[in-house]
Amino acid sequence: MRNKFKGLYAANIVPLNKDRSINYKELKNHIKDLINQGINNFLVNGHAGENFTLTFEEQVKILKTIKTVTKRNNLIVSGLNFESVIDGLKYSKLFQKFGADALLIFPPNSWSLSRDDQTIINQHQIIANNVKIPLFFYQSSIYSYGLNYSNKIHSKLVKIKNIIGVKEGSWNSKSYIKNYNFLKKRKKDFLVMASGDEHLYDGFKYGSDGSMVSLAILMPKQINQMIELIHKKKFKEAKKLDAQILSLAKIIYGNHPGSHATARLKFCLKLQKKISQDLTRSIIKISDYDKLMLKKSLKKLKLIS
Image (cartoon, rainbow, N blue to C red):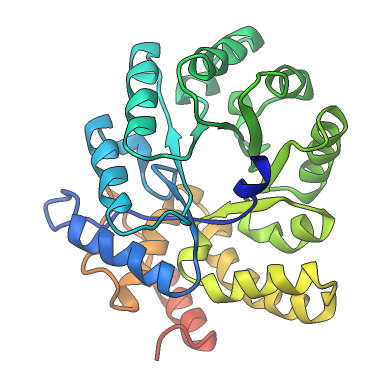
């Protein structure tokens, strides 16, 4: 069962109208376009999908909308980001009911200020007891303080029956490899999914079971091809593609502030004429410098004419 969840997952964005309501028609087209470009699996209601700015009702509708254009072979992992256990219990059930194949449990933002290990275990255990579908936990960036889990917490989470894997988002190759080794030693078939677009090559070369990344919405063919080359041990060719992927990833995710990444992704999609607005729910305005660098990068990569 775990093996079917291996592979690349595109973390989709949510197109908006001018009034910042959700443009569900463009959302359908966004997913259709990715399927046509070779994407089989999706992470919905994630950071790129601005889950922290959406109501739970909107997140359910997003899932239901995406299910209307996907097929049985398209797996959907839905993010679950909640502070109140009442919301967590209610919407984990609804996400399961409306077609999520698995859930990714995000650490609540309040934990960045203060948290204790047992609270984290309890948060995951109560959802595991509430649904039948598999779960992933989210390993946040090493720079996110209280949202980043220790190996002590990992050792507890890996024992929860239907937690089958982790979205490993340390954003640091050294930390990724350390966590990969730790988790695999405790459960050999535990799925470690690479998250940081900037170390996809290192992650897959080391043995990643898959990846959940938003850059796959801009470079689906290149990322799929790089993964395939790594699996064939054609590392030199894969490294050339990695250089292309990195050139865009560094502009989108590497420039301060990181919170502007979704706005940069949307700006790129608008340049490609795939969405009509590049608005986000948070009032974010990317710099003219970012816009210039993104245009140059997309042209160089032949992603726009």
